[in-house]
Length: 286
Image 1: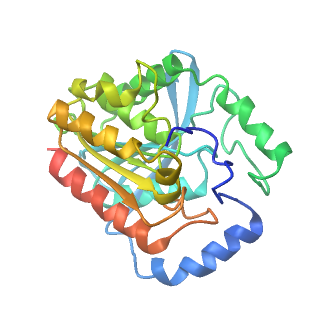
Image 2: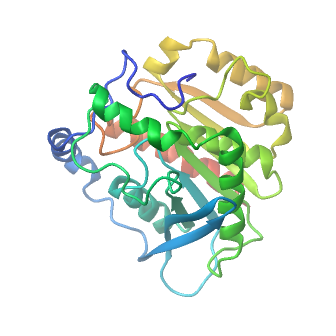
């Protein structure tokens, strides 16, 4: 969990290739069959004005007139792409207004990676440096603030309800930033195989959870836990000290298991994590 933006560490298998995607699709077809959308969903490509430019994003909400609690989905290192659009659609069908921003808008519009990609390939991996270089802690905080403010301006959003945030890999850190920096708006933060949550720096986000007023769900991959075994204990201690409602759990799955276009996607554990997130939202976004 200390490795926020490098899914290519030696003990991970986070490949995204045409062959890997096809394999995952075939393997999960049965698991996803029958998961019909509970409601018709409207999908729109939008632009969010931030302090640093124009962020392209996808916005989803149930069809028809109404206002719904809102959610920000923060992507992993490969950015906004069909897998995350599907995730946004699915969450909207649950009765939420959902935005999925492109975190790398400073560099290029989504999709930021096209064609086969191998984390084990140095040439492919080098592409990630260009994308992540502008994402300083300050930039992440500014972006998170922009997403929260943008949602509150949308007519489909019920601003009387708290905002939910969920993030994957590098996106996990953003969920903490949202809850910490916007305690009056963010009511839930779900981090899935998130990185950078526990560091030895004085500004580590786990040391700041006392500023949040959100419920937390921290779902940790077993190989991330093996790499940083004390992270879960430090998180639990920080939440306990802050008297913050939180679930910190190590899942029997590999880093990246929640994202369906990855080679380590684990359908059963991904569904269990999704159910835990929906439960958190139901409890925390009133």
